[in-house]
Length: 147
Image (cartoon, rainbow, N blue to C red; front, top):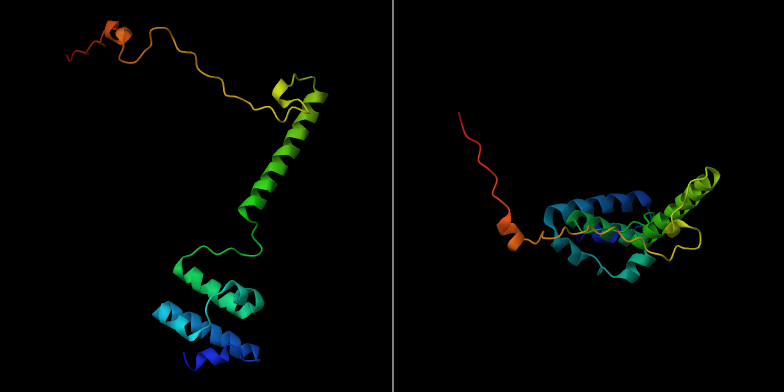
């Protein structure tokens, strides 16, 4: 690694790419001892020099750590995209319903987005308490007789 570490900053691209491949191979083989020949993994270094970002992200992938790619949207962005898609779908469904004389529930009327749709609660039957007096009064199922 003493020979490879200086070649990571070489001006020739082929030399740098080969040095990166050798470094990653060494990291897969030896693990953390390779890191002592490289600069410390700091966010500032990852931002300023793309070669170190590439190397350290590859180390994270080898270690099985989650890596956030620049092209992938974050969780908040994905959620915002899903909300926008659902709002667009709701608007198109409202248009379809308006054109076909279908009654739209109050919760789905335009301007009522603040209303929450509550799931219907099941009504309990009287005397259906578990383990109570009603359970003691119900007869046990009859056993089937074998022939």
